[in-house]
Length: 278
Ligand SMILES: O=C(O)CCC(=O)C(=O)O
Ligand SMILES: [Fe+2]
Image (cartoon, rainbow, N blue to C red; front, side, top):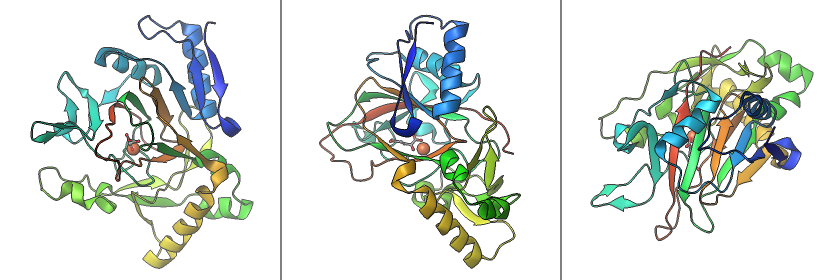
């Protein structure tokens, strides 16, 4: 074993130290990374300036063999559509990437029946401050619910919709939001078997079978519980960081809506495919 993990606060997130992304990774190291991912939900690898798109794709495949491209093809990397570019730079008259991938709490691709297993971001340039990515531990938040609330949520499903809070993304009519889809309100992690809350302010429209009012009241109670400081981790980027998170265990928010336009932030992003939720 050549690699180690340094855990963040409360074990929510960990830095993995010592991986060489230019070499194949041994089975032992692979197992170590996979166990650390199940345990910490967010892994970071720091100080990897100058990775190629192929190396970032190979790093992404450590977390699942299938990758998928994003619905917005205009932001695909010119060398590989599996890499999406997030950036506030402008190239000629066009944005060099998607400027704001979601300054609201969400779980990636929850708006499809088979949401993303994981998301990996690789930073090429970041401002000295601003542009943090915020994370919330929905596994710990579930564990701490009262037994009564666990019983209440058991078996409930909720509807998710991409354009719920993001209608502006679809204004030009070029891309249609996928139709609403149903997921369990509490989902079981396909890898660790642990349960986590799986509704988010950004994409969850309503809990199935409840009135809009009751559904919103219940969701607001759950969001207030989840968004307590004890379940939160704000990630401050340096250039050359890889950060990967488990979308069945955490929700996250960008903070790029109000980024200072004179400070550049460019990040490559990959989506690791997942299966149906249960
Ligand atoms: O830019 C960020 O900080 C995160 C963006 C985001 O939500 C994502 O890439 O899924
Ligand atoms: Fe996201």
